[in-house]
Image (tube, rainbow, N blue to C red; front, side, top):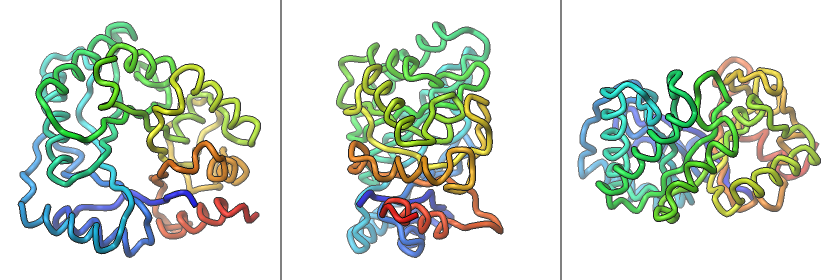
Length: 284
């Protein structure tokens, strides 16, 4: 059975996230290790880190994922933002090391009109600097984007170009695919046949061995709309048939899947997990 979880809050200390994930019924979970809307981050107290690790062992969560804050932009043409982004990524890898977190997810950012080629060069240079300054064991996962204007990572070839530019860092990089972003960018997941075609494209362009994690989100917008609006599992444009295909695909069975779905009057985190588990079982 596929490992499923949600993004949980670290309010009150990172160790609180483990208990929250357990209460929601997660097999895995994702966090922001600090406030995602600030550049600065407080040092994680040793006691909190120790409790985080102890609770993980107690509840036997199979995987924890950290996500980069919203502000960093590794493709930025703005020198100040770019420098702060490199520093933030280096610092976040160190925080992951302190918590023994195996994966850190990052967006590739926006070139802000400077062009794809310039954006790629900025990302590659940023990652070279980060890896030279950090000895963290955490693997950095490059997340695909919805293909909005000036964004990097909207196509498999975007991600492949970054990976191919950093052959020496093969063991330190991987890929996280977000299903909402895939759909919005024009990659079809709505039927078993469409999903297979998309996975075949990924295999040809990047290789499934690079895929370490999925963000499992339905999409409010039409396919190819570039609208990054997450929806409850099965209630958006991908639909239950698409998610059943994803959750039951043998090539994806050993990848953890993190839900970043809304919490509202329609459904909460546990409700979305329940739907995902029903679909993973093949039940209609």
